[in-house]
Structures are given as C-alpha cells and as structure tokens.
Image 1: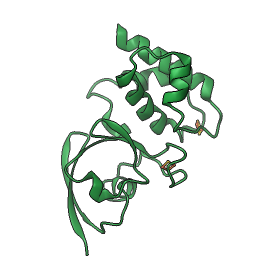
Image 2: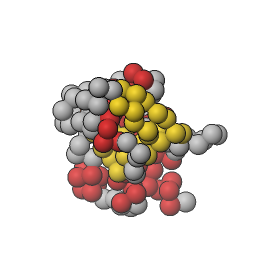
Image 3: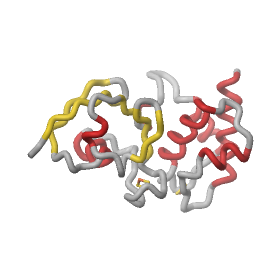
Image 4: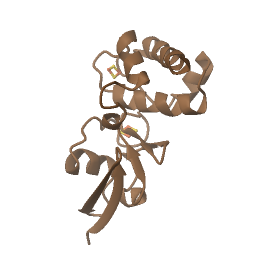
Length: 156
Ligand code: FES
Ligand code: FES
C-alpha cells in the first residue's frame, strides 16, 4: 500500500505518495525530476547517488524513501545560491575536476560534507573523507586539488 512521505528537498516542502519500498534516489529522480543525483552501483559502493540527509551524507540508492520522512534532503541542485555557485562547485569548475562528469554531483556532495567536518583537510583526510566516491575516469588528482581550493575559498 502506498504511503505519503513529506520531505524538505532543497529547502522546499515536498509530499510524495508512493510505494514504501522505493529508494530515495528513485523518488528524487523519477518523481521530483532532480536528476543531478545519479544511479551508479545501486549498492552503496560508488557515491554517485550521495545527498545530504539532515546535513549528513547518505547513499540515496540505499535509503528507503520512508526513512527520509520529515527530513531535509539536499541534492546537487540545492547547493548553489540564486546568483552564485556553491564554493565547492566553483572549485571543481576552476580545477577542471571532471571528465565525463558522472561522478561529479556525488563528489561535490561528499566534499561539502567533508569540509563541514574538516574545513582545512590534509591530502590524507580528503582521501579518507571521500573514499565513498569512485571516479571511473580516474580524475582523483584534480578532485583532490578542487577540495583544497574549495577549502581555501571558504577561508576567505
Ligand atoms: S548508486 Fe548509490 S552508492 Fe552507487
Ligand atoms: S569524471 Fe567520469 S566518473 Fe568521474
């Protein structure tokens, strides 16, 4: 039987009536048309589907939509302000830290979560903090540089 779930998505109250077995990722992409969050492995191993759930990173491919009821969800679409990108988005662009771009939304969400905890991370802390994310284009060096650049921007 369908249930109604209330979510605060990117600051907006949304209500979805759906099968409780569905995952948050599917609801975001198919019902709310927020396709920035990607499907990769579907089993918590690649980070393409990362979102912030009440401010903490969560694999939306694993989270049943009912577990997000009454919670706040931030997707890649919700990071930018009305007239400027989020500093992490800017840093990824400036460093050219993407090739095909498929992993990029999840990488950026992961970097935002990391920088909240560690505003000035070392290389090792970036590797440890983002080990939930895979880049099949192997763009890790530029991604690491982008996280350092984002940290620098946030200190200005
Ligand atoms: S799609 Fe969720 S971790 Fe890979
Ligand atoms: S840029 Fe292609 S998967 Fe990372």
